[in-house]
Image (tube, rainbow, N blue to C red; front, side, top):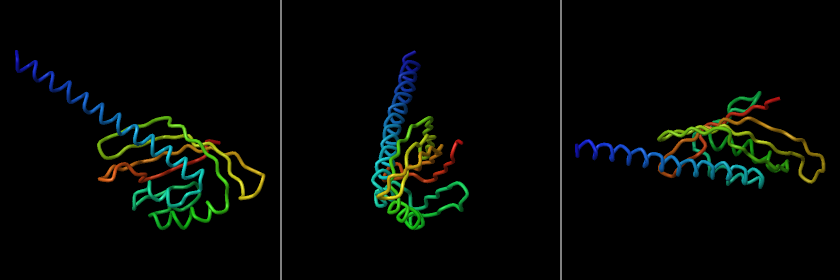
Length: 148
């Protein structure tokens, strides 16, 4: 009887520890999402590169996959220099496993030429796959499309 009770207590403790770990990971991933919003709104290429894995791939609509941080920098630096951006991201769904997580976000915002006063509204469904390593969670694969 005592062994059964100890076994049940052990299972409950393990489940609560797992839940606690997932709560921490969930918060960290929410922080990365907000960090992505911040670096995008500030057109901060260095900040963007810090939240990406070295082997990141971004799958943009009607474009070849952009592979690796150096390619991302080549694409996004001129984009950030040319446009003023203001975005928000709403997490619709998140699933976390030990080393991989996915997040489905709706990104909405405006984009216009620097110094201009005409802005386009946009929204994208984003699917982000994050990878956890010794330095924490990083964006590993990013895919997005326009829902309209």
